[in-house]
Picture 1: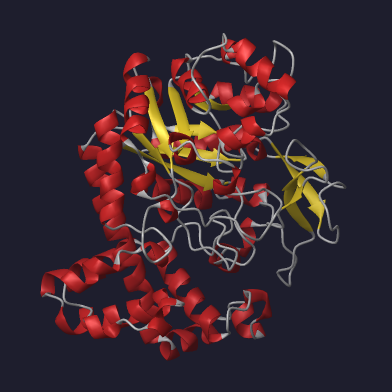
Picture 2 (picture 1 turned 45 degrees about the vertical axis):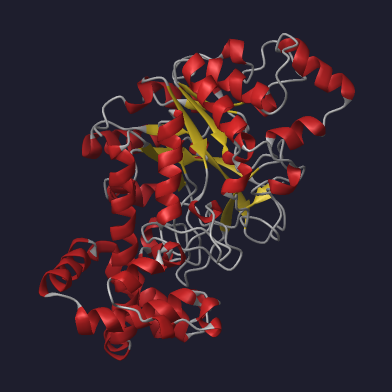
Amino acid sequence: MGSTNLLSKRRAGVLLHITSLPNSNGKGDLGKEAYNFVNFLADVGIKVWQTLPLGVPHADNSPYQCLSAHAGNPELINLSELYEQGWLKDDEICPSCEAGRAKCILAKAYDGFDKQATVEEKQEFTDFCHNKATWLDNFSLYIALRNRFLGACWNQWPEPLKQRDPAALKEARRKLELAIKEIQFEQYIFHKQWAALKSYANEHEVLLFGDIPIFVSYDSVDVWANRDVFKLDEQGDMSVVAGVPPDYFSETGQRWGNPHYDWNYLKESNFDWWVKRMQGQLEMFDILRIDHFRGFEAAWEIPADEETAINGKWVKAPGALLLTAFKKALGEMPLVAEDLGIITAEVDALRRDFKLPGMKILQFAFGDSPENPYLPHNYEKNTVAYTGTHDNDTSLGWFNSLTGEEQHHVYHYLGFSKASMPYLLIGTAFSSVANLAIVPMQDVLELGSEDRMNIPGTVDGNWGWQFSWEQLTVSKVRKLSGLVEMFAR
């Protein structure tokens, strides 16, 4: 599907991360259930599937802190397809493998591929490695080294490897040749499976909507291999880290700990690192959300030795120059600006100058003045309306947490409809003038707080939610498709 003006047409979408798809292994993947989900969306008239970032996460499984801005998470690979290809045998699955599936089973799959793949398949793999070399060469070496050093961050590696001494890197590539090939194979399979899913979705008139975290993790190949892009000292250490000041989500703000960009270097290099990142993501997705868009105008810099985000300061960023570079390199930009939190007139002007839609969250709309920008009567068409996001409680959980007076106020604004939560909120999003209206799958399924995806500022118990098809009753399907049809989505 072409990218021209994708965000100007009236559509509805569902937010569901790949890991939340049904799967007996406890984590969704790119297999048949992903295709079943596309079928469900197409059947009810939903035109957009929004996911969270697809990168390789750290131990906490947060998709917003990844080991690479380009690589896909091999844990999302559908293993059944590798059996069907004959590259894996049934007896190669063992209980001990499941904990480290990507390291164990996919290594066996590469061995099977190496021995049995056709000439054409091997050429396709070679072409993939060549076409993605600008990021894949560094990534495959980085992961091989990280595994060798038992998961230690690159700043704890031996000095020659930490500082990327050419002779040390050459020797590491020689010693780790097989491990590097296995990692490249994982990325080849991931991107091949993702491209097939995207093709299937587009054939069914479903657009894939991705998410770019504005910052990258310090423990990532991006920082290790592109030191000049970030504000680091000669040893590679950070003096300032990223986050946000105190807001709705946290009284002490959020200290993310990511490195800040050296915008002077990026300007001198025509924002090449960022342009390549955006190009790679637009190959994978039809639409992209820029998480923490306000960081393109100014970012909250926190001294690295501060434990909270309170004592930070805003530091300007060259957002207009960066977005101009995107437009020059990429043409039409199907980008959504995540503009939640403390948004200044300058941030809003930057978004409007490039005609990017912002976000409106209905859970933020009530209990304030009639001028509250999240109330539907204040929306404009170039907007993406949400009942809530992955960082919010479910809409039912949110509503149940309100006082009786607050609940009355919500129903009063919405005309004392007989519809119950959360479908009343879904209908409100769909009926708004916003071109795109998105609802989390938890709201489609009418689930409570125990099924939320993430609680910002906490580490444990997040990102693990999965749904089951049994939860999607006929009445829920009818309600959803009825709202899509009623409000011309």
